[in-house]
Image (tube, rainbow over the protein chains, first blue to last red):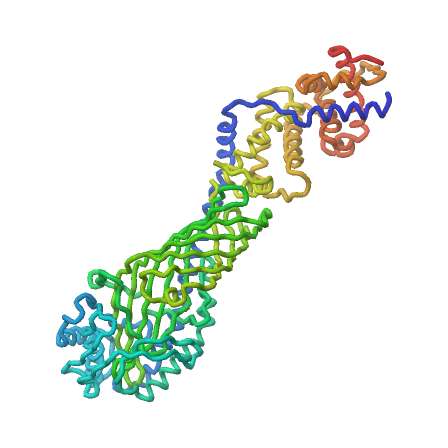
Length: 450
Length: 184
């Protein structure tokens, strides 16, 4: 037989089966999927195993940041605790610092004597190793702080604070403070401070307190690298960090996770009046954590959404009389982002995309904290106010990012872009000061295609 | 509803275990792969079971697909292997046949092959002894070499050649008888 003819025969025959198909029953997929499910019990267990492992890692990361911040703040709170002769109060992070929660709504109505009585109770709750004399000093100094804060009208932007307390130290009696504005200056740590409302006619801080305060500030900034690193590791779950040049990362307070009595934490009916910082006002690097998911809606198009938690921190000095005080405002937001992403490079395990969208956030809590220091710069008291945050924060953002598939439906992503926080009625924060900023995001994104 | 992207996206989704993607892939290739199985086993239900087994292998091992060669070629190899495993397991490949009949086909008639349907051609192939049919399918339809076929069926390369030549001759003879395969 002719070999050439045979080859033609073979080629024709092969071509005949190029698109050859055999019809199947209509319920064939259902039959097959049952077989498939029966054959793959281990795979399901495998997925849950990895899910549990991922959750454990996330939990450990959160514990990690808590651990790091507590340890980074330990020197800040315990500084000079051993040098105090008269006020020998233990102030390590393990010791419970007395928290006095007050009703901001009542404002001026609170009487000084009542406040003082409250402070005595708070002060006696602080573990002390000193003598009776030092104990009295603690009571007196804490009374000063509460007396002042209790006479501030919460709805008054520039309150006139009157001092009237029989228990205060002689230097603090009859002190009046008047609101004044100071120009922005650069502080010793390199941060740019902002115009703040300052209370005039304050007696100068004791030199030793200022000096040690600077040391404390430097120590705080010196730990930034560690905390920034911690933040980035935390960000593996979905961190978004504002990149303002004048935003300073610093340590979270060891009291960040202190228990707050809900019964005592009262909520304001409007945007709260915030602490007026006298100096060293610093907006911390915003930290955003969250879970992100991606749902493909068309070839190369993906709808990304999830849930985010954002912590905004502002801190600074609150110069009430001779007692060194620092304030801290923590704002907690929960948000839902939504963005549309288009992959212009799409490989099996890697994609590069542009995205644009927005985020709606609701402030769930605003907490003001005041720390006071005696002449030896020992923190001796903390006052805490808790408010509700009215309104919502809307944000528009866009960026370019890359996504790498780590395992099946788990992707690691890195995005850089810009965000515009639409001005609204939200309390002052880094966002209201700088509505437009650059954001770097990284984290894990879970693909939901089922 | 599964959003259909390109083939690589479908593969990646199947690697992730996305059920909708698996269903889409199944619906895309199941009838074609059923055709492959039907050429090796001459029984609809058996072929369907083999097709199901093949897809289970695919969804279990799709992560090993590394984009070397076409995806359909990779799928087809799995179904061919699955079918051959079935034949080997049931010792069908080793059955002996009376192949003493001689076939003397002078020339091929291309128009006959063009005239008959794929189903008719498949029926003709199915009528071949299992060993011949396997060799014929592997060589003429799948495009494997005789050496590869020898390795797959655990037979000598020369045996594969001879079996294929005989199988082709049988087919041509039957075409002549059934569909007017004529000598020109």
